[in-house]
Length: 229
DNA sequence: CCCTGATTCGC
DNA sequence: GCGAATCAGG
Image (cartoon, rainbow, N blue to C red; front, top):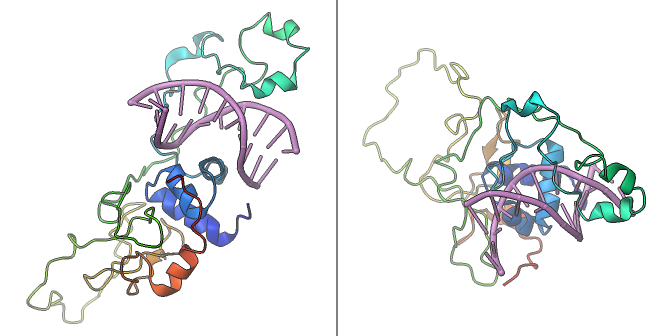
């Protein structure tokens, strides 16, 4: 897999949007393993995983026991088929990674969950697709948020300090991200990195039935082939 | 069974 | 660094 800047950007975007690893993988035409692996290497914020138990920082530290790191994945079978007896005998634990529970953690002050305005239902938008398949990325639709139509100018401010960026309260906030000027559907192709100040979405008029504009749809749907229909 | 994400480890 | 294989919880 060639992780170009663009693919990484897409991965990060989709990841931050809360899509499942498998879904991201499908959209990127890679396996979920690749997605997870890369995401991990990129240090992307781990999303709530089903088996996320791992004793966060409990007081297990007392003794160097317990927490059998999990049986050596069958991989180990080929790794040390012979020299097993002398180490497996003394300790049921693995030969590596003795213990390190309270080590990595507390790194995400702003655990941005799913942005309500951006990803209402991240899972399966199920758009009316035809030739393409059904696994389209969730369109960044915010019709509810911006459906109000002010009758008068909402900006009575004459000319004082506009103060576009009075402050930067939240690390990640959809409020800071540009919002399509119009209500209608807009291309949700990410420009820049999510979470960074300049991040925004394309905003152009998307193709009918697609979350991206023509330009970005061409990139997004380069090759949709694999699926397990 | 299916799904999910995490981890390990050969390459 | 990459990702298949595997693990493991729901």
